[in-house]
Image 1 (tube, rainbow, N blue to C red):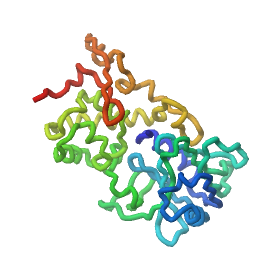
Image 2: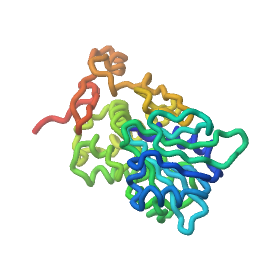
Image 3: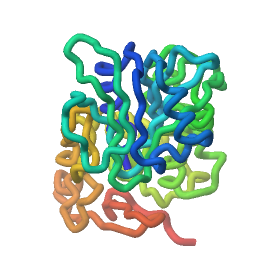
Image 4: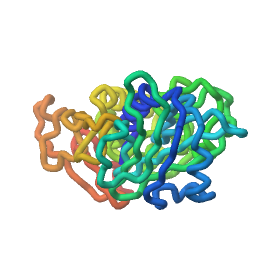
Length: 307
């Protein structure tokens, strides 16, 4: 599932190629990919046709395009799911095998003429959502100075790279919960953009166990965790995100390479690099977690004692 760095890479690419262009035609090739648009395929195609793309915005893992030319403010929200891709292509380029939605765009310099939504597993999709005021009346997220957010994303907290987020709020939010630390930082209502991969990486970097009860977390530990989250996301973004297969790519079809820098996630049975630097030998372990996996070092991420 794409997390903040992967979605931001896509947002930056879209901002370059589609912002300030007009949607000339819309073709839905698979109705399942617009199932979240409750007014149906025909309304989706008709409403979107003729709209201009004012900006491309992201908060956490949510991605949308603010639209102009509508009677009421609205956005085109895209959920990438497990395998969704937004690709910019020339109009005469062959259709991708799993092409679901095609948007033909107005001409701009030598830019490609189409924006295509491709989705192999069909967990993602596109839909239109009305824009509502942000709760704090501050700019909504990356790519926009407006204080409006799609109604469908209004419950999402500010993400770890948002300049308008107060890092101290993370401590308060965690202490109000009685749950495992990893579960809490995956909660998009507490802090958005963090998924399984970067949760494991940040917890490893902060030297904290994701099994810790949030009610016991101390302020210095939360500061350390927050710094680790920001650092991991920043480095992953610089590397173009994390690609384990061909399902995550940027708008030009290129993969990210942060997987080469992972210290915990996916490294079961391999030596913990921090322990090795401290002349210790410890192997990364994998444990089941919410239908997925958690990767940790048993030495430098000590588990809480059982009572």
